[in-house]
Image 1: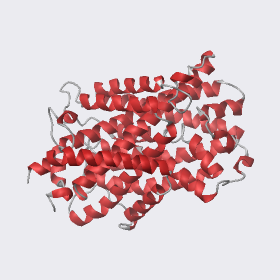
Image 2: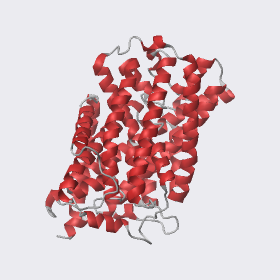
Image 3: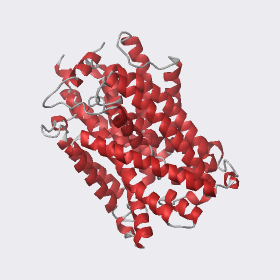
Image 4: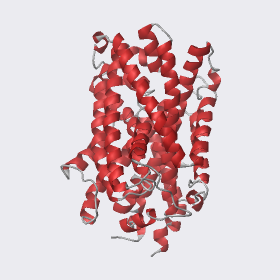
Length: 468
């Protein structure tokens, strides 16, 4: 095992020992199976349904259903890999920590940056959508539209997305109060989310028209593939489960179970809602549609009450998603700071609440700025890029850890090894190649900034560097 240079690895035993600490400076184990499953479902169900149909259906047409299947298969393969790594290395930091233990510091830092894109950028995209449903609710309930200049970012008809900023501030305050309280609130919100999505399917199916599925793939197979790459944005909740590794009771059992429960619930709901939405509305009408699912219900029933109920539920649900995603990012930064790759303030934990307060404030500020001024489409594609790169690293990490630490206790093992992790990596790379060119340009800029940070600060301050 290399302990010097760019490929120095952090020993698994060290990771686990650090996670097992108690008292000041350590996170608290307060989360059970249902709360952790709710974190996974809360971070996943909603991101791809409440708004991604407006960008993916114009790409794929009714064949967007196949796009969801492709994304779900990729996520399912990766979920199995996450379940094994999370049961073997039950620590904070998710893919970052797994990469540090298996592929070395430089790769881990790159994965950490991808996770920051995944979580921070996705939280911004989700917050943008909150304003759309808030406006829909205000219109249906009171006949009032929120000012366009204050409900959309520049480039999408607005100047500053104020509702998105308000949402991020509320979430940041709740997270600072403590993860136990946040998880309980999130569990209630997830239950509301599941109810309103079932409501959408039940009511939406009354307006189902088979003719809306013709032509099935107007933009051909390329459109289906491109849409699948964007839709993958909606499966980040599987990663969010593993970020809670140091705050979960009985992590070797709870982490893999929660990941698999989240996957089953998410995939079932996504495909049901996608089929219902496309069956209830011609695919051409999705392009640029705001608060799309609420609007579909209003069109199907001819009444405002189903859309009003759905918009209210969406407001609560999107709050839940934002809460979990910002939570995930703070824990990744915490892990990177503990390793010396980021400044020490990212690891400071409040003695009163058991949460990294300064860390959370930094994340909340950054997410609020992105949500206020960046277009939704770019945010969604950047999230997919970060997610897919991180998922690829996890898939490869399974193979590496099986070879380097075959003796390590595992609460779960991926079936059909090594076929499953290799297929997972191949699917992820395939979807990456289908993202838009401007996404690769933005990703290159992010990597350039990350390289400057790593070689200018992180490499010298790494705890492993000090142990040589």
